[in-house]
Amino acid sequence: MSTIKTQPVKWHGGKSYLASFLHSLAPPSHLESPEGYTHRHIAFAGGLGEFWNWAPTEGIAESVNDRNGELINFYRVLRDPLMFGRFRLLVDLTPLAEDEFRAAENVNHGLQKPNARQLDADDPVERAAAFFVRYRQSRQGLGRDYTTPTKRLRRGMNEQVSAWLSAVDGLAECHERLRPVEVRSCDFRRYLTQLDQPRALFYLDPPYLASTRSSVGEYGANEMTDDDHRELLQLLAGLSGRFMLSGYHSTLYDDWAAAHGFACHERQIDNKASSAKVKAQRVECVWTNYPATEGKH
Image 1 (cartoon, helix red, strand yellow):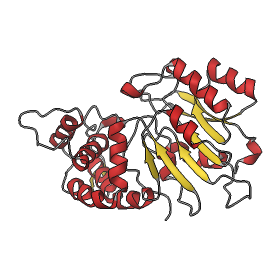
Image 2 (cartoon, one colour; image 1 turned 45 degrees about the vertical axis):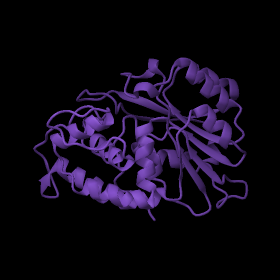
Image 3 (tube, rainbow, N blue to C red; image 1 turned 180 degrees about the vertical axis):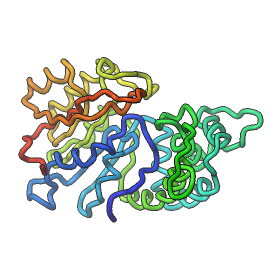
Image 4 (tube, rainbow, N blue to C red; image 1 turned 90 degrees about the horizontal axis):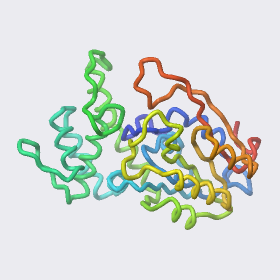
């Protein structure tokens, strides 16, 4: 199987645009070097932008993790051979429409409103379908507002309709990609502690430090405090395995990296979270606990 062309959900802060850069920084696996990693773990799954762009490799064990219960329910349904068929049928029959978006929004918020299409919030498959509709049909992948109307065409149809159908059509490929992957939902402390070992590679893309962001609150109950970030950095400093950590420059992160001699790799991009027409440039950082020469530049 090759990489995934259309990831299933749009997600705030996703790293699909940095996937090739991240992969170039990854150390070799045991298939490339006798001492390479055997396990690949993603601690903050989100939309899994970097994962979908990483072709599966036989002989590498993979896991993904996130604290967002609705997101993880979606991934579990997407990978499950029995539940996926019914899920695919539900979304296949769903058009791009604001009424569908509102009905899905009601389910994920635990609401049932008059005149809204009724879905079973206790059914994991219907919850997953509602989640997919809500985030795929939302503006900027935030799940809050219905997608922005457009007059542009793609494939001879409305651009947003084309994007929706492409996402639905790509689900079978995503299902196959996720089947050999362990899906977890736990705190990053437990995830790192339980899975750490010398031949593990962790990729971490946490909610960025609040002081470095143009806006906060997009991750709701899963936002991280400064103390959470300090605990994360402390855990990473004692890790037996290798890690790649995404973030922006800050005194906290830069002092930590300098104290432990960790490498920082930079890539300048436009600020994806900005709503401005002309987006300001930001420097994305990836810290690693192994030398730059070990990555596949």
